[in-house]
Length: 42
Image (cartoon, rainbow, N blue to C red):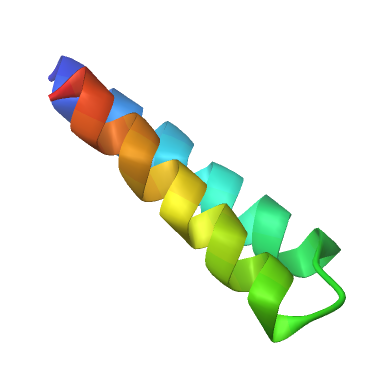
């Protein structure tokens, strides 16, 4: 259950972060950051 909540929060962060990015490079960094956060939680 906790993993699903964390995953939902990370997915929301990715969407919000990607919408705030002005470049593809910035979006890539946001996705990488979110992936690293998920790895740390698991």
